[in-house]
Image 1: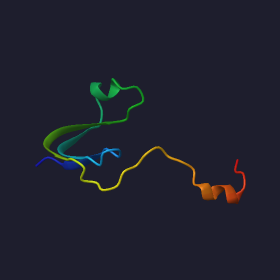
Image 2: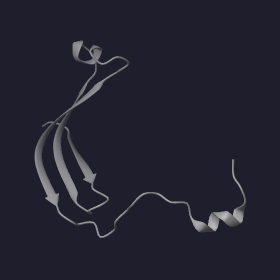
Image 3: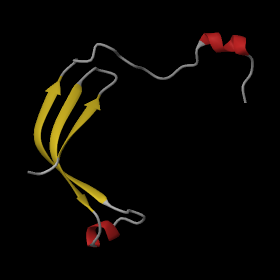
Image 4: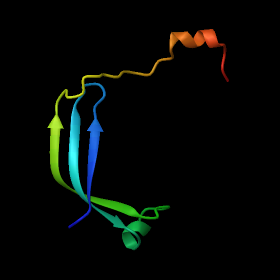
Length: 77
């Protein structure tokens, strides 16, 4: 049996979720690793199942903004 892993990708604007089930393999050395400068190992994944859940996440995020309450704490930096 191959090692398995799960990946979750979140679209913070729409709330969509993409779940991936994969078989995973660590490549410890050899020409594949040497092809990526500075790499010590690679992770090879083969997708075995995928599930897209539109708007499954009820929360939405936008651009980050400073809290207006920080002004009361003085200037930082």
